[in-house]
Image (cartoon, rainbow over all chains, first blue to last red; front, side, top):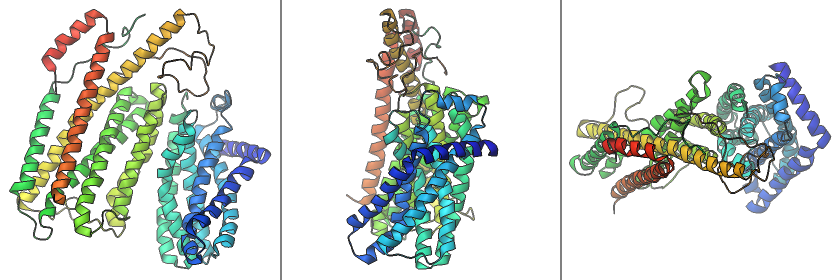
Length: 222
Length: 282
Length: 55
């Protein structure tokens, strides 16, 4: 399963490196959204600073939807998915690989957004390890749930509108917990941040496990 | 053209359904009568306690009965050994009824909350997770309406239902894990000693029974609707296909046939070769 | 109207309306299926439902 996962992850990432869709489309939209949030909320520094963690994770959330849509769009061509299935690759491996690729893209995205956030909202991360752990766990949750739903809605003509409706409520708890954890990291209140890590952890595990278990049945003779 | 030669003839409605329906109506009426008139007002809450005879039973039906059944059925559908469209249809019926009850949970809760807490809504853990649950299963219903072959749709919906169900334990434990405005469990609390007594306790119990009966009746009827709907969809499709074949149009040519007048099979994405639907399930 | 009355009214009426909706949907679907069945099956069905017609 792990070997297959690496294979699939490598394939997806190589496609991304060559086509640079995430780089030129998803990333700019994410940064743009941060700018738009500032427009919407007004220039008062205090407002932006306190809203910053939530806005950061909102941007990451929407980017996850885009990234997973992209992840499945690259296989929409005639027979690609069938080819994957027939090749004997473990479906759980496919799931882990695709999720890992999405997670990698999200990680890069977060680094850039972190910089943009520091610049645009004037906030500093005080407890770096807390922010990093929260990011790690949240990214796992986002990528796994996103990939699972991407597979669920793949091939549906209404995918563009349906995927967000389906996956955003599922990602909402991750948004909540990650924002609160980062809020702790920005203000320095470690204990509150830690308690939200205790929410992020189980979500990451649960979505990961569900994805591994259900991805195969989901794709049977899709 | 042959319609219905492979499928079993339509089963008649179960005889017990009428009994359950009558019992549901009677017990609900009794609960209302007891709740609104017979029982005394509470020492602390006054007359607001009367909503307690409705709100928790409605919530119980929504979360545990309806969504629980939906999750269980989805699991049974996905597991190969018990795979049958019966479970898929039961899950769909259960989810729809569950969504209605979930919405009612929020509504009755808000009507209780406004005079008690002074606000219509607050973002505490229980209310938030319950609202999230509603949205999650509304997504299920939206997914269900996307045209697809029964087995494909069933698989997708089953996965969606199982993931949505993850929120149910969160709702349940939210009052323990977090500081919430919403109070803790009245009956199923940690000590298993209920904090409600006398005629009020009996009325509450009756409320649970009444709404459970209502649920059973509703799911059964909704299940039947699901079976009938699948049946008529398939028949419309067969009629349209037969007409097309008669015209000599279909031999593996996509797009012209696939996007014709019939709605039922329009949604299969890449527009591959059309083939007649397979009859599966009860 | 008190909050309690409103709560009962909303709860009961929504349940009632939904139930009626279900019955209507079921009836119209049964009629649709009935119409498409060949005549002998249809006669069988009316005999069956004559005994067991529920709410």
